[in-house]
Length: 434
Image (tube, rainbow, N blue to C red):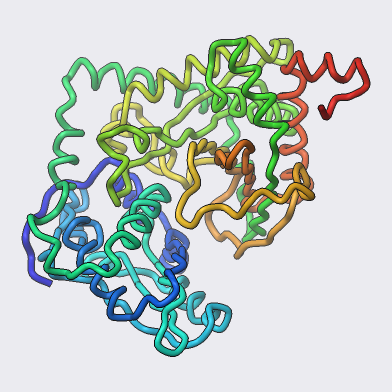
């Protein structure tokens, strides 16, 4: 791997690294991710490898290691554009590869000496079926996978020689731009996070889900009614549909855990800006968002408050987790995923492989999956993805019983429909599902 350049980490990468440092050695594979890309019929192994060479020229994160010799000043090291993660061929159907994929997923990455990607080409005879990606979260977020998939499919059939001109962007340049914040802007950031984190400390819920290894339960559904209700509330309140579902989530947590202040972590939205949308990188961060949800407050008023707080948090942009922790007087752990009890992410597009078509017979029906047990992460994570004219809603409970996950999903539904005047008009007329 020939060295070409190095520089500071993006703020999202730095936050992920600090989280990794807090993990016990036996749990460090828990930040590994798995995805698969279905390949077009007739695609050969050689064509996939050629396409990957093109991607490695364009996207530096595919050929990056991390210099951790100075813990307070870690560096990302971009290697020669001709460096490509090994793309090993596995023969047999995708179902037969499940155990092998699981074994690779459970193996921690050595980020100092290996690229944060393990690529496997699944083949049957002369044709390939899938490209499986096992990667560390420091290399990219879920939005970057969509870029990977798009660029891979576009590169199939092209000669690697067509990738000229080097990388399409520089991660080091982007990282340096993030650090070009004026002192006044940084002071505004710190004062905001300090206020939010102080509010979290007053809530005193640290340890709510602490304990032994617990189950990871995923309750998910597709709903057109939820999205329609949220759109109406957003339209009449002058807010966003993301703010409506976030408010409903906060109200549900209030009802389940009997608290009037909810310390939610909000996924940063910079991925949808023109600057970031075409990058394979971890640019997103979890932003503290302390929400007050008094029992007597009306849903419509809460939506407006939540929307204002969310816009304020997003406007502050990414932040240096080390500096923020130091200036706010909190442990770095509190700002990472390990200190996060409730999280929310609204995604205005499908990620990686598109979601399957909407099954009309299963709309609004909660489906359950049990995922590998969590050893260090605790809490609830709500993800809402726009899916055609409906929503795909997924609530993951880590170390949380199924009745809690089910109660929160029910609470979200109740809160949204309580705020939807049209729903109540139809209910009075005897037709609430119209």
